[in-house]
Length: 129
Image (tube, rainbow, N blue to C red):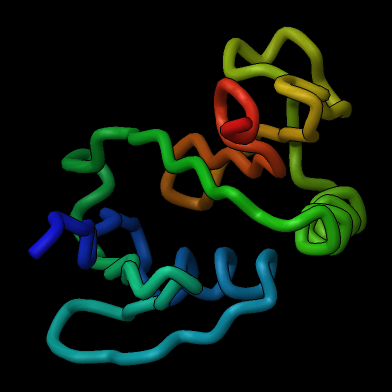
């Protein structure tokens, strides 16, 4: 059997707020709620299990999502409509714009818990030939 990521826990100040932010931005749905977790399943079967923990215990992480051109368009429209601060780069030196790395498009922004989120349309290094 191959090794695949099945799920990861995403720490949040408010699990519902963070899950709803994410699902609204990417037009997804929550798929389960049990115990302290609200799960969101991605198209490859991996779940993000949002869990509320004290804000001072959250270590900001980076989450990058490969999306289609159409999903990027829709999400980027929502980002702009909602006035979400966004950048073309992880160092936040190019505000209010996107990048065109590897022949695709990408954008960085923060979620409600302070995690750095990234949407890209082409994987790092480009598509295999």
